Image (cartoon, rainbow, N blue to C red):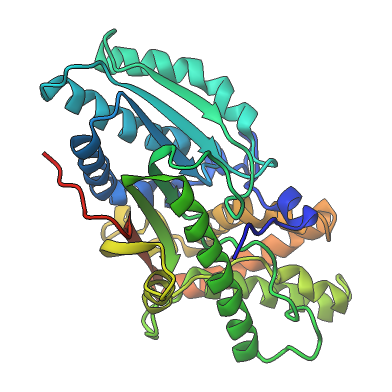
Length: 373
């Protein structure tokens, strides 16, 4: 199984809404921020294990699917803080430095990241002091379904909410004969298996032995209590169907909602990781919930305004999928679509729906395991 380049179309349109506008990812990524913070202890412990095991002079880390906005700097801060504190505490004969690569597809708003980098560096020096461990940040645009780095050059891979995005919409999904939802789900499952297997194989070539990879993935469980993100995105189809029935969109436009996205079960993930030719083994897995409404926990006992909350929820969905819709619809149609989608989401919020997340800590297979000090 070799590299799996994305089709030109997918590589160009799969990205979050850039900039800092009302529907931008930078302003509508609180769900992702909460997930990053929830996984923080696991990420930090994985970094500590690598550093205490290998004591590298230059610690190389890569954030895959980094997107743009404040969440990018949350991950950078976790890496810098751990290495800075450890390098000062442990009796190490050499000075450490950090190289951080930020990876995403070329359509990502890298300019927004690097415009903010100087201010971020000033803030780090204020927090850690002038003697903060030297760190260097560079962009690495490209699909993580292809090789990104030289062989055995990276100590730590991090990726949050990225592996659900596929290299392509599964073949046959757009075919009118494939309207059965169970059949579609199987096609998506097979595509995920192919893509995630490719991803693991490529990262195994780039990761240094003794390194770690931590992936946080929005998943699903076979339990009616949970309504996963895959289901949530599917509700957008209902809004589009209403528009089609009213003559505001064409029947052929229905395929626009077939996104290259899939939320796997933990059983699917383990099966792919543990396959016979697997390159990694699962060192640890943690599970936690996310609410559709990212502010649900902050409402306490107040009666929520579900109409307002529905609009807020839709904004963070829009920040993720609007670029995929821009190639099919004009701005007025998209605005109408999300207006209707917000009404549908609102009807579900009274149930306080949630989905599950999986945090996977992966190590390379092979050679006798190195022990941390």
